[in-house]
Length: 350
Ligand SMILES: Cc1cc2nc3c(=O)[nH]c(=O)nc-3n(C[C@H](O)[C@H](O)[C@H](O)COP(=O)(O)OP(=O)(O)OC[C@H]3O[C@@H](n4cnc5c(N)ncnc54)[C@H](O)[C@@H]3O)c2cc1C
Image 1: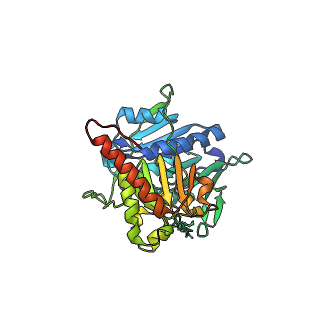
Image 2: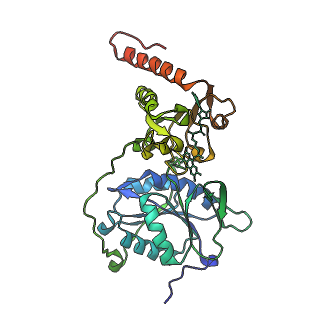
Image 3: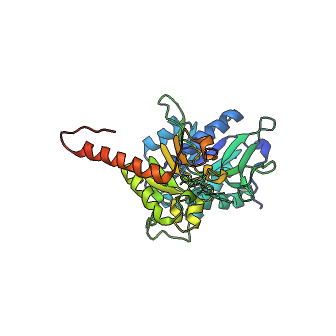
């Protein structure tokens, strides 16, 4: 028998795929709830969060506080770690039973692996790496918006015939939904048929990648530079300033392509999406592809010689200056401040 997902008329509700690691609900789940809540409100539909594997009660309740109306939790130990076969089989089972209209996941390693498998199992479509999701007010369809043709256009993709309408969105492309302690919702603890939990793949061990530069996705402050640095050795200026600010080091693709710094530092469409409290960048023009990576940065300070640089259109503070003069000056001030703050009996200055 052909396993076809529900026809559009029968499908209802917005689902998000929450992730846990070692039983801890991951931040991507709260980001997805923020997006999911907007979509569910626009559709006048309930928002459901699906979580596979172990998670504490508080983690589950936190998802309700952050926007879920219902949490579907399958806690079986076989789902402790992400394994493509049982995860896709269990998720497809839930989709067939409950027929969500929209199902979104993070474009994380898990989401990028799970969602294509699920799309095949449910005979649905999938738009990967969306930057924006909207509801078409005329049709109620999900508008899946993402860069296309080398990032030169924004494409809007619809799924009129299959359900669920499925999309992945980049981590940190939306702020997590803030918790509302008064929100009420339902937690459903489910068991699934044991045959769904079989896996031909076994998890042997987990070794974190050598995360050189990877810290920029977690850093509160990121100092970045681009082609304006003129040569790779000048990244020392950036690193020194970053140290003074306890910041991560980012870069434009141009700087990475020239081999001045490693790819893990790249910010933008084909690099990392970051969400620091402060993004300080120098010698970066502000191409659309670069800006795609800093949309959720809280504050942006840009240094550029060219007063018409695109980066100034998004910067909260723009400094028209030569980075080779400004960066060392700023670093010296910050270092002196740090030093005096450490010295007993002295007060910070500057
Ligand atoms: C499919 C695709 C994906 C891409 N993905 C990414 C991505 O993920 N990230 C990314 O960054 N780019 C990406 N790009 C490349 C992007 O289009 C730009 O080419 C790149 O961002 C430019 O890098 P830049 O700002 O360092 O260089 P430039 O655009 O050359 O800008 C250098 C800036 O430095 C300034 N400057 C020069 N000297 C000084 C000085 N002494 N003091 C102060 N300022 C100075 C200049 O005025 C200029 O504004 C992508 C492109 C494509 C087609």
